[in-house]
Image (cartoon, rainbow, N blue to C red; front, side):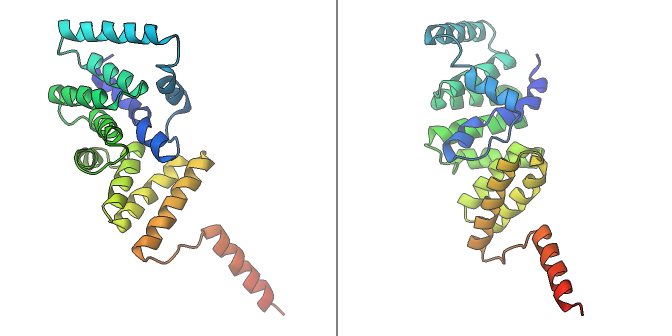
Length: 211
């Protein structure tokens, strides 16, 4: 599988911050289960054996971008975030500013910093959002960056674009709606009245005014 094909897996790559921050799993459920189960299936010895084989493969073929990508995911799965960040950094040297690599590296580096997305992770996310401005993972992380930097209005804008992309996932939509509400409050913006609630109030007012 070429690295270009792995871009399709971007939403499943940044599970670290989702878990750490208690945020919605805005990923394909099947892909998420695979990512979380990579270290759970079989005993630890088999996982370590797989990773040793992958490291050997990369020693023999250091230009194997797919191999570096899989190794980074493996380190994320076993929560070795520092090595995951180093692996994605190495991959970045090979492929440049690929969105999947930027977002994966940002997530790993942030987790290596105990969930702090400032500094290098923020820089990577800002580069990624320029390349894939409508990607759900990029919008999610860009909102976190903006919120942590105190740019609450920008966070609202990113998460506002993200929310409709979560159609069918009520829990995630509600979580993002709460994030938006919190950011709007911090920004000193007036609360937005939900369209359905506004329509109900308008109808009720009209009924009361009717003779």
